[in-house]
Length: 582
Image 1 (cartoon, rainbow, N blue to C red):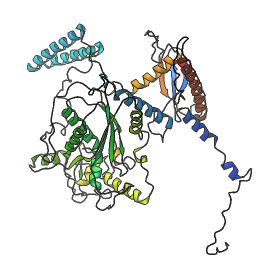
Image 2 (cartoon, rainbow, N blue to C red):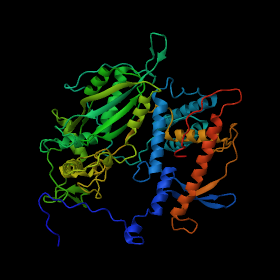
Image 3 (cartoon, one colour):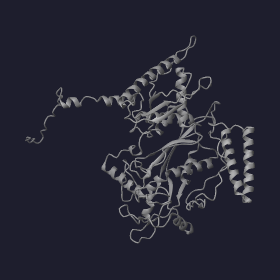
Image 4 (spheres, rainbow, N blue to C red):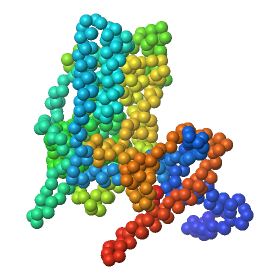
């Protein structure tokens, strides 16, 4: 029994007692060796979820197990791999942001052999057309086979792409839903401002400015695009009045936000008259609506950016979803005899996707089911190359790419959790594509409907609670940004390390002089963790940590040797690096 405390008198705090040596509390206070192992692996950039791959030399029959990184992009799965991917993305943004030349050279002229193959392909096409007009179908089949051989030769000769699409035959199955392409008017909406349209030049480099002293500089920009407001919100992102907050429009905007971004860059390029390049990331705001940060090569007037954002919209021409006729607990049912979804009471088939679109086309007063627009907040500023602001902006753009969408802003209060639940419930019943199972809730059979659909339980990523409607790619980089893919940047890192260490032969079998080394043929297969020749995960992590520590020591020593001035030279020694992730 605890004695009552007199008013105004508080008991003195009891000091924390030291656990008795040998007790359970003392043992639990000791750090776990496995946790320390994973912590050191993360420090040295070693993948904590390696994939054991069995490699067999086809010439000698030698078999060995090699650990390959898992390649995860989220730090909750594998922090070392996620950080490595983030550094590669930062290098990709850094290399293409302030460049003053075109990233990709023009194509080389075609050789005489390549031109001869294209000419031969033209002769075969002419002969096939004559045989088809004369109904000589046996000759048409022979010509199709010859055309296939010539196209293989064209690809082997080094030409990119396909000369012409393959010929369709009458025996191939035709999809009734895709047999006719629907066309809609491209006339701009009356409530959207007009934009100037110029011919887009084939250049990706921005404008060069000249200072009063004659020096030239080429700045770039940083841009943030947000969606419209759905109601007043508090500083924690929750709505002031949840009953008046437009969750339906927020869900539809989140689902169609990628298409709205594509339309923005298309309009911006037409308005500016040159091929504007960008690299950025999509992430949720505190109010859980998606927004995007972009690094833009070159400069664009802020008024132009705001005008293009205000004039950009995306119309969704889908069947109406004003009334939800069914619920996930009482959905329509599949009729095997009719091969269609029917009403559970009347047994009448639901409207097909083609019928719903036909009714939409025949209605002269039809309106899009949703129109996605940007908000009034458009943040744009200039960034000079080689400054601390440029590096800080790159880190800010890639701040959340290692996190899951739902982990960017954790819900810590009941008000935030209820806001997240209401948005998620709106996303669960929002159709994501023309094949989404949620169309059954509104009495419409989706495109290519089948019995496997579950009304109200579409498996699309946009309907999940931890994606918040952002189900597509979160890293958006234009085609001509740096002229390289992420694999090319990985190869550049390996080439830099090999050059620093003085390694003459790389992983691609080419030495420093460009001579090709005879490759060794290997067969790869995924090994099971319980195979006899696969060590335990802890043994493999210990081995990888020891190997990575040696690599780091060798790399740092090579850096020190390269930084030392040669006899007779005086150079400043660069700051030492830690070799993180090597």
